Image (tube, rainbow, N blue to C red; front, top):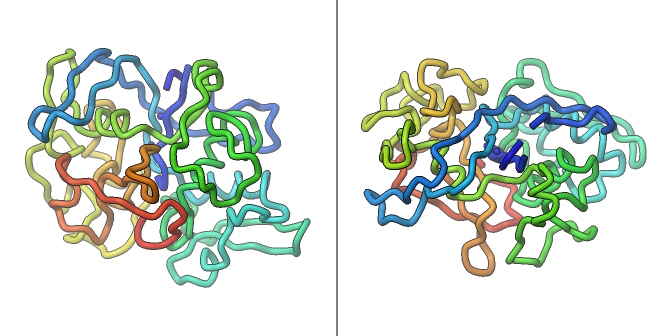
Length: 283
């Protein structure tokens, strides 16, 4: 895939996710974002949205089922804390662990397989980075991001490895990639931007999972009549989504709002921040 959306949003660099040579194959639906060379969104300060290449982005947020496949391939010892026991003990958590160190195995709670892996599942930014590395190389420490076995990295300027990226590696979406996929009107390089990710100036309870709705997670793609122009779902609401921009020295940025957010948090003009090692709130 050239250049992908959840708990992360995934972007992929040149597309078939994922190689059958890996211990566990994780299939991720993607949408292609074109209109190469579009300008930034002038209505929100002209800072975000310009991307000068085509890329694939995850059509849906990453699910518990997909994350369980990742855990069963990489977390027999849980050396990097990719699994948090609150994933099981929380009434809203979606993943259970069995066995002991060296033989840990993971399973999805009934009814949670197609829900986004999120805050109640305690996934940090660095867990998300390792997930995308797995999609690239089948391992957690190298890929588009090189981590070197440091569980919670002190590297606050993490960047994509150009060679891996250009060879078709998978990454967390940059803020521009995420923003364009969510809000760009599409169809030309000067099409403009919508305020909301479902191609609208306004939002109702029929368009996204936010504070007017059910008060908890819904399955990914539940609002199937409210896609972005490029065919992605839930970029507004359900869970906040990481991008791979690091703001300052301690925090990363989030976009899109969540199931408990006010409608204004889903707007293109709103962005939030988090500590890079945080595993709480509805991310």
